[in-house]
Image 1 (cartoon, protein in one colour):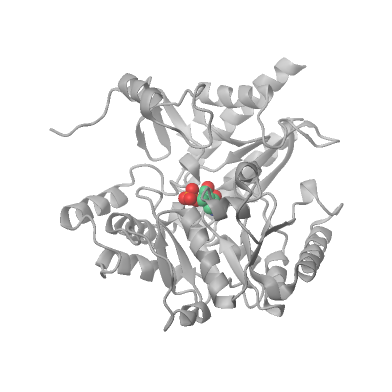
Image 2 (cartoon, protein in one colour; image 1 turned 60 degrees about the vertical axis):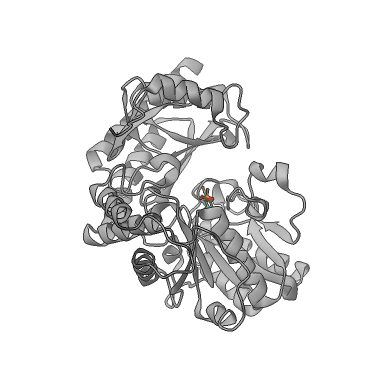
Amino acid sequence: GVRTFDDPARAYELDRRHVFHSWSAQAALDPMVVTRAEGSHVWDGEGNRLLDFTSQLVFTNLGHQHPRIVAAIQEQAATLCTVAPGHANGARSEAARLIASHTPGDLDRIFFTNGGADANEHAIRMARLHTGRHKVLSTYRSYHGGTHLAVNVTGDPRRWASDHGATGTVHFFGPFLYRSAFSATTEEEECQRALAHLEQVIALEGPTTIAAVMLESIPGTAGIMVPPPGYLAGVRELCDRSGIMLIADEVMSGFGRAGKWFAIEHGATDRGVVPDLLTFAKGVNSGYVPLGGVAISGAIQRTFDDRVYPGGLTYSGHPLACAAAVATIETMEDDAVVEQAARLGDEVLGPGLAELAARHEWIGEVRGTGAFWAVEMVADRATREPLAPYGASSPEMNAILAACRRRGMLPFANFNRIHVVPPLTITPDEARAGLAILDAAIGEVSAKQR
Ligand code: PLP
């Protein structure tokens, strides 16, 4: 018979004995067992149903167990589970075509990886070989992955333990008006000063030494800071001036999360903002099977027409992952899921979170777009002192998260922020129910502090 691994007590016991978890001290871990999931809900080991306001790690964009994706994986598994990367394969070819049909400009050839970090590693390698330059500029308050170079271009505390041995990684400040590095008071000022700052960093580092500027089109884990109008176009212009490649990391923000196929479309001016390389993972197939990749511009493609690209991986374009991507993208097209995410933001999450902010002193700001929102929790609205320090948690934040779970909602948190990042396919009623739980949880914990 089929093994269902359906004993939660055994899953927990074996996990604690044999599984080593990411980004954690192992001894005190108490992982929630997930036994099943459907749509926007997961079930824990005790049979409690929780509304998934996390999309796990912001990747189940079409929700759990979507029948079209499950069927595509099953059909591909029954036909051909796997091939070596050097062969051509229908699932991979079709996934590449579909992805290329949605990426901006002439980014129409895809190098597939296993996830986001290795996509960023390869994008940087391509930019370095294409330009013959070495340095990579990236922002503080960013996340680009856990492998060595990817964590070194990252700008969050997870870099601190590993920031040695990767040469040429330079950090700068991106725009973030609520905690402005430039003492700006308007989005316009923040945009202009952030661009002047980047211009100066490029000049002082030496424009001819810089291979790439890498940034998240909308920084995700670091706080969902939607850049002000004109910022991404301005970065593109600065890069063009000095022959620097622009790498857009759309691992979290891509595939509808931000209410567009890719979040860089939010930065569009008349001629649009087209990066030289665009990296993706997560939402490309709702994370059902590991998959990431790099979309490559025509100019960079030509660099490797007659020159060997020195990089590759065993599972590049794995048929099961690519079949899941084809089903995901076709479903997004057929069901207008990107438009649905945009409406969810405009009509439910945006207005609903604004109401919460009006009610709770602890909410300093809410910001976002589509199904991609951050709630900035502060101990003091005037000083904007975070409710948990940078890089840490706090009893207040932990109590709010516990209250959300107790009330039936799985929340996503990073330091002093709660991110509202449900599946793009969540219904308006489910989304409102989740916001009501967040409202009650913040109310319950803040009332105790008075
Ligand atoms: N880039 C961004 C913007 C991410 O959010 C993440 C993961 O959260 C990554 C890269 C790394 O992706 P992966 O964990 O698949 O390596």
